Image (cartoon, rainbow, N blue to C red; front, side, top):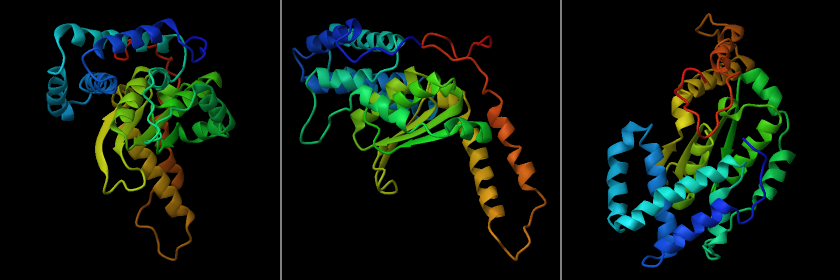
Length: 285
């Protein structure tokens, strides 16, 4: 990952904006941007999440019907420019493009935080992350209002600058009530190979308002479901053992033996950092 670039009108972001404007000649610009985000998110998701493939593929085809061939061909070009822009360094590419295109909605309050501010906040809240990783194998990040993912991207940026491989030692659970924001965050976290679950729903009332889950390729390929289950059991058992009780535990497993399960989590902690163009399935990586 190269040097972090400033959030200005770079070559790739300008090319992306031009493609959106071309498709907006016959369509609403908000719809073009939203359709790009949803179709791109579906394309990435369907490569790794087969349980939702048919439903999302049908949705993709439904969106595609709205555009002619030339217009459809511009969408993968847009995604290519997002990839190339992220290759130049960490930044909230889609969030800044949303604002650059004048798509901010004052009624909904959709004003994406400038990346430099997100980066400053991530630096200020870094804390004892390295110690947590040393003790537990990885660190978890919860983002209840993820937007386009700027704060998560900034956190990954800060972790890498501290010599921590965020692709192996960070897991993110992110939520947003706005579907387009979820798609924006999912695309960027997926391209940066951040292990994450992005949820379209209401973080304040998840039982009543959870609409969909999006698992990044890093989450699926890194077998994070198993890692998180192990972590949950370790945490639950440690909490149980720390509570005074007059009842004898119905197990002979000691806290030390239970915490040895963390070794499974730490197995890949020394793996090399992937770039956007490296194959995560390549055994030589």
